[in-house]
Length: 185
Image (cartoon, rainbow, N blue to C red; front, side, top):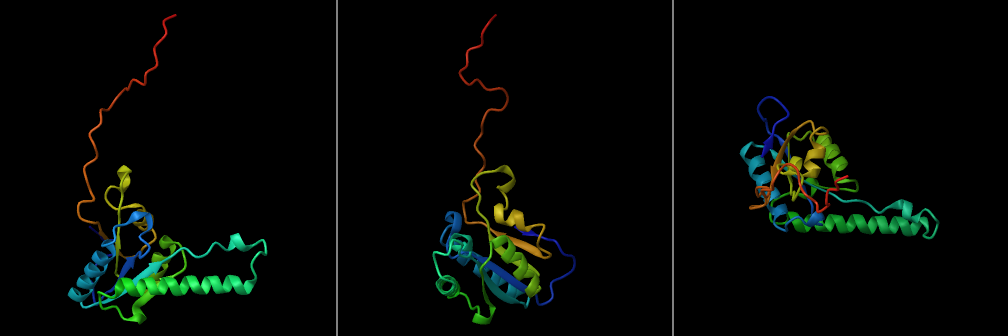
């Protein structure tokens, strides 16, 4: 699903594929590959460039505020987390030709990171996956995508895994009886 925010044709656009190698919230393993392939296809078709972005939540530094760990140890843990994130992104993009110069690892919450990276790159399109298992407002786009809508100045292309969207179960509407016996006075 393409949500269009900007007017006019695309001219050699920067396309940002936002992937999640950690499969946060139980995202299907193949969703990243679908995002990357679709992003590559769109970039190629429009004569643009594909970037891949991975936002991971950094170490909670407040957990170390009691002085239990030295500054050097905290910096070492942060450096290790960044290296691990870069390795995850490189493994994820290996099936699609994304040069390292266009692979971006960001140690921020995904909503903030994707919006900031898209703005910095001047992205015309952000391609991201969306899964949602409940919530009427998120049946179409998913929670992170919904939160990004107002923050992005570019178009948003949503990729859903095949077979994810199912019609909500039919449930009777109106008054319901919960087993309480009415009392007559």
